[in-house]
Length: 291
Image 1 (cartoon, one colour):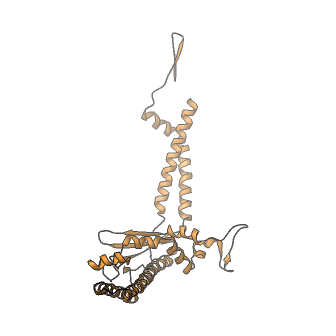
Image 2 (cartoon, helix red, strand yellow):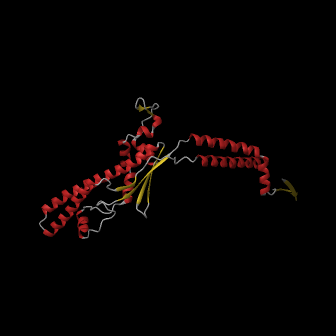
Image 3 (cartoon, rainbow, N blue to C red):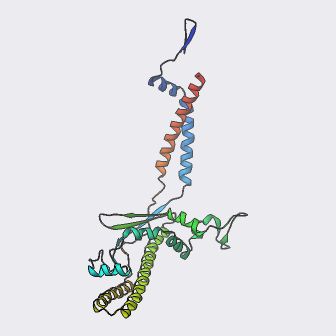
């Protein structure tokens, strides 16, 4: 650093900093950088080894319509009459709606409760011997709403719009449970949507029967009989079809290879971050002292 005086005024002339200067500076402090890098490398290895293996189980399904096909032909005047009477006829299944149903709170919370997943999701707080929660004073047992948030983070649903196929992924530490949950979610989804369709069809049947008895117009009665036949067909098909909304193409199997963590990547990334942190520390200390 140079101090230059001219006409009673002092000027501070900064020495030019170039790349070579920085390289030499870092090289002079290579031991300090190496120590910081080593500490980060050891920490990343420790973290990678302590992180449990996570397995991914996936099930592939194809969405189907209420008539067992991927789409239903237009119903023409029957569809118009149905909309006028407030009846929803079976149509091509709305894949987005079905996926949203699986991800909904009511469905997930019901699944967690039916399969008694709370002790599994919160294993550290569950005493396997006494079959009771081991909680600190004032701590409440985990609720279904809390479990919903955690369980939702384990589920991933991918919809391929080109093929129409839907893939449901479940990640968990136990590969057997991951595969079991994936298959059970699809089974429950089919059962839930089947019961919903049957209930709605039965309500429509009762409504149509009442309207037919109160109507004297032959043309309108014939149209309502046609709608009634459709609803009866819906109940019949839904009652006998196991894969009501999702046709299983490839069921989930127990994964043999872990999906995460990528321990080598964690170690490499931790070492790189350590080297960068060490270099930045050296530069900050150097220029702080100069200032």
